[in-house]
Length: 83
Image 1: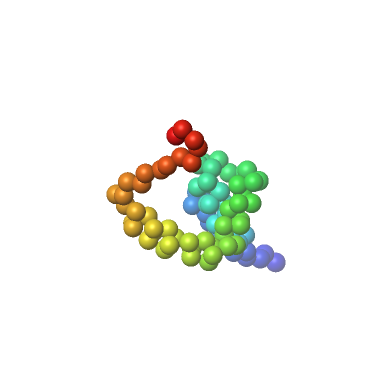
Image 2: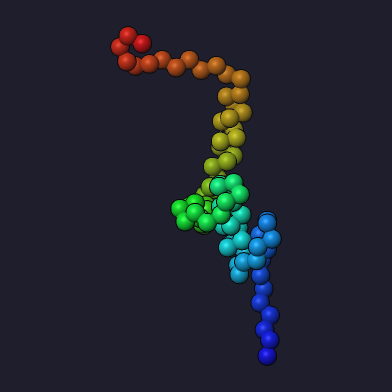
């Protein structure tokens, strides 16, 4: 008897067994450009997906800080003598 398996299609049309696997492939592709297959980048993409909630909490603060500093000129002073 034939069985039906659900597959999830990523952004370039590749079928994956789980939505997470498709998301990891898409995120890996974003990080590497068009190449997929780097084990390190794939591992990083998996970590990003696993820690999504924590990562998303960073963005509102980043956006607030970025817009608060928009247009400001910050003078950097070297602590080295003679600078």
